[in-house]
Image (tube, rainbow, N blue to C red):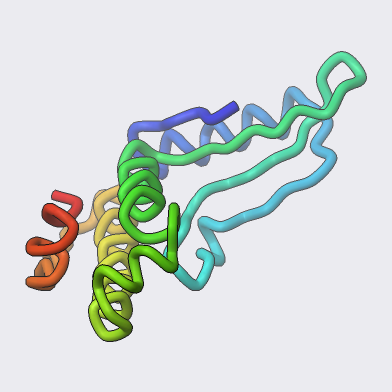
Length: 130
């Protein structure tokens, strides 16, 4: 199950409720320590009625980021690298990482400057995340 929250404050409240009401079998905290590519979320395996259930908590911006990255970068990495070239792929990954930081700041209620969209993203991938 994927549960989406308005912002980080609401997400952290959801984490507290989950921990209070369910047995946590496994927890992966990609909020405090995002993955190298910028992925941010909480993943839990909880026990419900004796069965393990995977639960992911993200904000709506994190979901937008993850969907964009999956669809444009990671769904078929070889095809994307062929389309963009090595430098274009690297530039797109860097843009994606900057957008992860940008969305994280917004989710925390902080001011943030929208990263510039690399030309290759506009020309080859149909635009950026905003």
